[in-house]
Length: 128
Image (cartoon, rainbow, N blue to C red):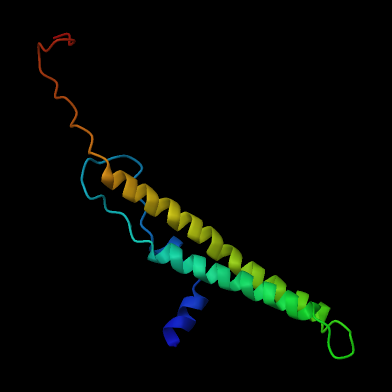
């Protein structure tokens, strides 16, 4: 239970836990980057939960009470705004996590580039 609460209080775990691949191909395989989708999936689940909670509050505030009056439409808006705002960082973190893990997987499945040719005196195309 404490871990779940800690997870909810630390938004955007993909930004913190996903290691992006290097900007250039080092020729070493596997690259030191994150291939696991655990962090982006966790961010997606938490974002969906926040947006679902916001939708549930809107639906509950629009349903009539026993007198036919809406049950706290103004109060519902007060709860919806924080739920939506809380879901936004999770959404962008999930996008970042999916993008970086995809790049890492793609680079790890490619063949490494050939080593650069070594310069030799008198080699064709050189002036020495």
